Amino acid sequence: MSARKRKIRVDFKKNRGKRSRAGHEWREAVRQDQTDDLNADERISGKGNLSRKRTVIAEESEDGELIASLDVDVKDCLTGRVLSIVGSHQCRVQSEDGRVHVCAVRQVLRTLMKESRNTVVAGDIVLFEPLGDAQGMIHRVEPRRGTLGRGNDRNQQLIVVNVDLAVIVVTGVSPHFKPSLIDRFLISCEKGNVSPVICINKSDLFNYRELLPIVGQYANLGYPVVLTSAHTGYGIDQLREIIAGRQTVFSGQSGVGKTSLLNMIQPGLALKTSQVSIDSGKGRHTTRTATLQALEFGGWVVDTPGIRQLRLWDVGREEVEGHFIEFLPLVRYCKYPNCMHIHEQQCGIRDAVAAGLISARRYDSYLKILNDDES
Ligand SMILES: Nc1nc2c(ncn2[C@@H]2O[C@H](COP(=O)(O)OP(=O)(O)OP(=O)(O)O)[C@@H](O)[C@H]2O)c(=O)[nH]1
Ligand SMILES: [Zn+2]
Image (spheres, rainbow, N blue to C red):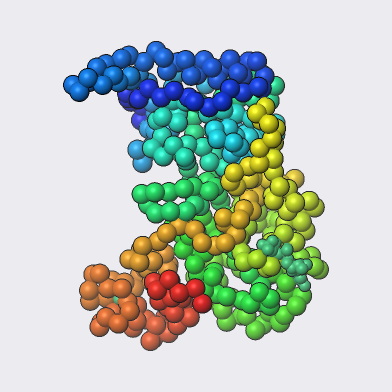
């Protein structure tokens, strides 16, 4: 990771969060964090407004996101993974030794980061200072990979980050196999830099050979496909092997068998993914967003309503082609640089479809996504 350090001036912002009834040491640290800001210097602007700012040394990631305040001794801190966000500004963080800490987020970090609602997200790797009994204070958020969320490039709401793998669950029977849904979700994966795996479940109920032509298309594009049955256990070992040691999301239409698969992978896992609440010291809170569950054989899984629906990032019309990976080498044969490959003449994509180089089904899916048609 390469990061630059720089001095920046941040607005004075008072933390108006309610005081916690939690452990004394932690409460003191949170209060200290708030009063830190009182060291801000005051200036009167030209219009006579009082402004309060303070100078902090911050670290900036490659893409310009401010990720850390550096006035803390790293020796006293632990690295952990955010399991879930709780209440307004707290989260559960699992340190490398497996212990879970309820952590507050440094006020200055919230001020520094571009999108305060994305300051800390499930899946984040953070540096935190352990305080009192299983509590802590987050000082730094590491740069993120593999992101899933909602919104567009300018206004993103991240649901989960540092996702290594997305298991897209479909079935050959009920609910009916819908390759266009797979294509939609593949776009979200490509956009978020998450590797997809297509999991065809309920294999005990249908003849796999009927799906081979479509499965072959995905395999040819380089997307791994696994066949499973949550009833007979077929393919579950293979699925375990694929997700071991990684952070995986499970997605798919209602009824495809995600809950059943999770419970086959590890008994009780699905129940945990749907109901998580913790006692944060301010009363009981149910987690707001995604929740990571640790796997006994290493790794984490996430299964949240937001991701289940397979409707994630807003992708602009002109952006869609870039996420159909088999289009990429062929768009240069389009006569018009802004070709949308719909009815333009001399279009490399339409020619490739006619020549059988691009599947007509995938092309049809492309047109449907452009038209926002979910059939
Ligand atoms: N025959 C067969 N039935 C399955 C299999 N996997 C799941 N089912 C059944 O399919 C139904 C739906 O399974 P769930 O695991 O609840 O599906 P889900 O994807 O979690 O659904 P939502 O919670 O609505 O998102 C249940 O009746 C399961 O018993 C399978 O591999 N084979
Ligand atoms: Zn074209």
